[in-house]
Image (cartoon, rainbow, N blue to C red):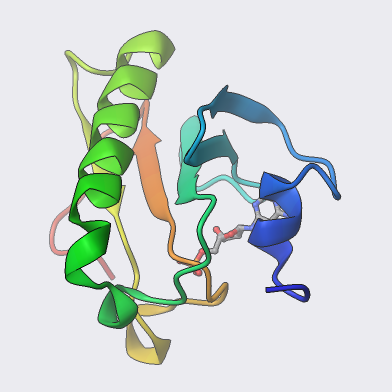
Length: 114
Ligand code: AMP
């Protein structure tokens, strides 16, 4: 999608603090971090929301979670704990319509989330 900000980050067309890249995924630090570690993991493929996932995306979404695990280990938060979140649509607070996994850690977190 030519007007999608996360597609532009994935293509290197706008800057981001990238922490991980592979053929099909990119991870970068959130511009407005909600925890000491707040990283977004995205597929290079443009998928707008969880509602738009297809069966063919199953492996990609598995890799996305494996990347989150590896990044959590690299950030030193795997053992103490971290949270992964994918917001879907307005009531969940999704503001960027290119699917992304939030990896949050480095502080205690409450439940339920707001
Ligand atoms: P969501 O509300 O789940 O759609 O999350 C979108 C996230 O993207 C927010 O946490 C924003 O702070 C973050 N964000 C938006 N634009 C950028 C950007 N250019 N670089 C890094 N993070 C961004």
